[in-house]
Image (cartoon, rainbow, N blue to C red; front, side):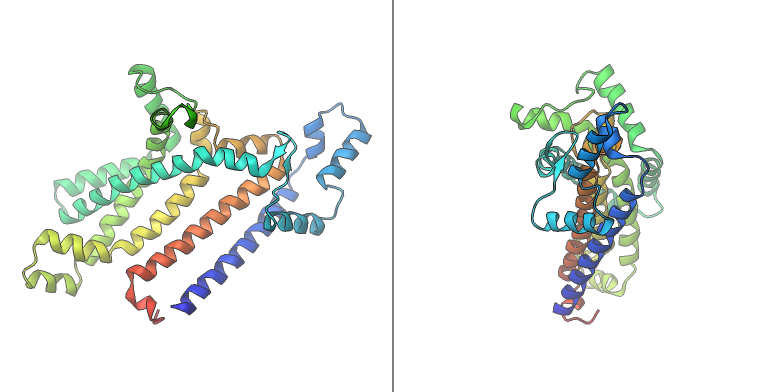
Length: 316
C-alpha cells in the first residue's frame, strides 16, 4: 500500500510540473503585447517599456518561469495588472462562488444519477431501463449552455421563480445565495448526471453477473440486499472515477455557465483575464485548475484503496 501511495504521489508531482511548463509555454507564444493592450494604442514607448519591466516581460523565458513557480511555492501569486489587486485575493473571492456551485452541481448529479443507474440495471431491458437510458442519452446530447437558456426562459422569464442572472451574495443569507445558484447548478448537473447514470448502469450490470452475487442469492439474501450491499459496492470503482473527473470538470467548466448567468465566479474571471491579456491571472487560475484535477484524481486513487482490499497489500 505504501508503494502504491508513493507511486501515485510521485505521478501527481510530475503531472503538475509538466502542466506548469505547458501552461507557461502556451501563454508565452500567444500573439499580442500585454503592455500595449493594458495601456492602449496611444501609449508612449517609455511608458510601455516601464510596464513591460514591471511585468517582468524584459526577462528571459526561463527567468520568468522560475520566478512564477517560486512565487507560487511561496504563496505569492503576483498582482493583477487589470484589477491592481493580488491574484490570490481575486481567486479566493471568486472561489467562494465557483466552489459551492461545483459542489452543489456534483451533489445534484450524484443524488440523481446513482439511484437511476442502479434502477436501470435492476430492470435491465424493461420499461424503466429504456426510459432512464433515453433520459441519459438526451442529457448527454443537450449542451449545458443551451439547457441553461431554457431554464432561464421557463423558470425566470415565464414563472418568475428565480432571477435570470447575478448572485445575491453570501452576506444576503444562505437561502438567497443558494437560490441564485440553483439554476446554474441544475444546468451543470444534468449532462454529468446523464453520463454518471450510464456508467453506473453498466458497472452494476457487469457486477451482478459475477459468481459472488449468485452465491449471495443462493444463501437466501433478498434481491435488494444483494443489489445494494454487494453489487453496487463492487461497482463503485468506475463510478468514483467518473465522479472525480466530473468534479474537476465542473470546477473548470463553469466558464460558459457563469457567463450565461452573469455570475462573478472563477470561470468569469478567467474569461475576462484572457480578453484583457492579464497573463498573471490566467496562468495562476489555469495552474490552480490543473492542480485541482490531479489532486482529485489522487484522492480517487486513495478511495480505490478503501474500496479494493487487494491494493492495501500492494498486490495490484
